[in-house]
Length: 47
Image 1: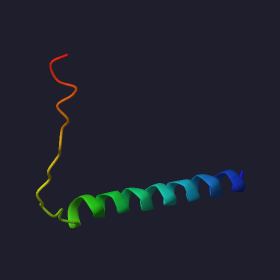
Image 2: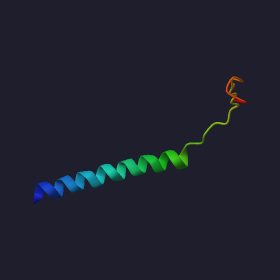
Image 3: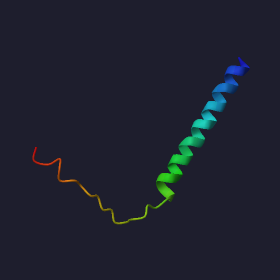
């Protein structure tokens, strides 16, 4: 039983670390705005 408790505790800690990393990336990192140009070929239109 202690092995199962240790496994569950490790999984909870890893999940909390992953959740914290995603939360930090979502709230503390500001994305940079930049211009994007996409070229589209004319061959595929009108068929």
